[in-house]
Image (cartoon, rainbow, N blue to C red):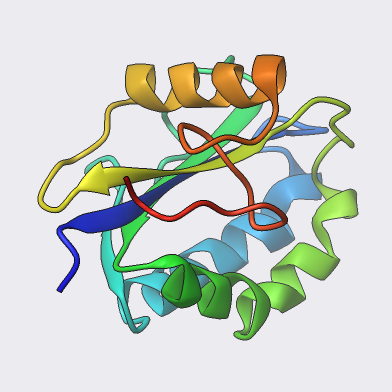
Length: 147
């Protein structure tokens, strides 16, 4: 039995403010996509405000949406991201979000029961951007086992 869980962060730069009519289709899908994650096999936790999502968190800027969650393992998160209704939203992301040149998503292992902070997540993202994938900060394309 592993004593580690997988943390993930991804950020997206919005083309429009969250309350702009161009974002309405994304906003309309948000509750369903969050509920899908919450009920997903291996889901542990996700960052959210009292509103039930993280759209009000501007840690990475007022034009950025942040998504941070914890999963039992890589397979659980991968299943949610790439083999669920989440893929429908990903296919439409160009309508709502800017194309980002630098890394915008990072994975890392945490001790079971630990809740990652945005400071921790930001540090992991910067580590990935500066050094590339490592056991400290990695991506689906190049994963590492917990140490």
